[in-house]
Image (cartoon, rainbow, N blue to C red; front, side):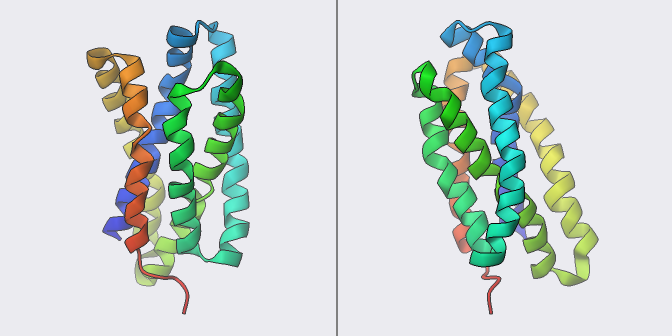
Length: 176
């Protein structure tokens, strides 16, 4: 369960960083207006909703652990590329990144409930409630880091957060 919490932490911090600060990065580094900078964030979040739905369907076919691993490791290249892209590529990459990253979110809740069936409430609180709480703490930490080191540097470093998803390879199998 500890590994699943670390995976939840990494996803939540990265998600909070993009949802809270990426638009400011686009205004500062790409010269977009506030309204224009919100479009890639919207695409990221909207695709995340679709990814959450699709992730549940796909997990039924490939397994819960495999879906969690795929969603985190599959998002790494896009997260690392995002701060380096020309403007025209930000839109499709934000869309793909949101879809892939959040496709494992709801799957993590079900996976936790399967590995700890006697503690369904606790697991749900850890994988959902803690995810939102960690995201809020992450938003504060990323904001402080952006004030200290600069937004561009923080966006570059935040791209490495999904790499913590490699820990998901060590989760126990959900398949018999």
